[in-house]
Length: 184
Image (cartoon, rainbow, N blue to C red; front, side):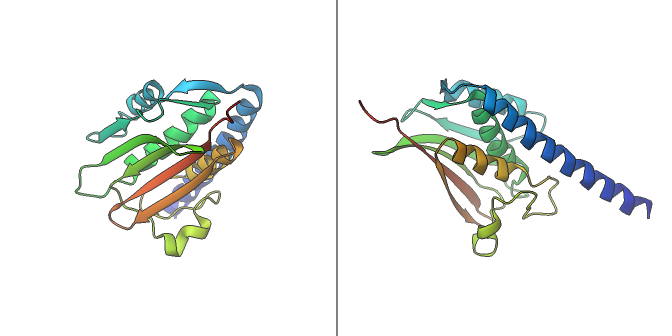
């Protein structure tokens, strides 16, 4: 009984932490102006912050196609942190994790991609609920189900769109399309 109570209490506290994170981030974003941010340094900072979580993860960074992104710093930090920490957290057991972060540019969009070789998500089964608050797809891995909800919300707030490709046991790719400023 005590173990069940302890698990339930941990889950409640995790839910409260997740809700607090959503509210705090929204307050921050309402008060912070957008800026042009270099992707390499902010991504490297997040990777350093993930060090305790990731013992042996390979990261490949390529921002040559678009080295800067216009967004609020807290939003970009939260977006990248959630995608990179998920890529590390949902690594495939027995396979060295590798995470690729890159940019590309289309006629209308700057595309930020985060790809991993982890557990993957069954999109046929869970695709409709991928960005729902507190929804999780790998219950064996600890988490609150807030990260992808936040990522989706931040992308939409920046007038962007999100595409996800995933294959179970092979990995997941998140592509975020940010509209380029109109020429003029």
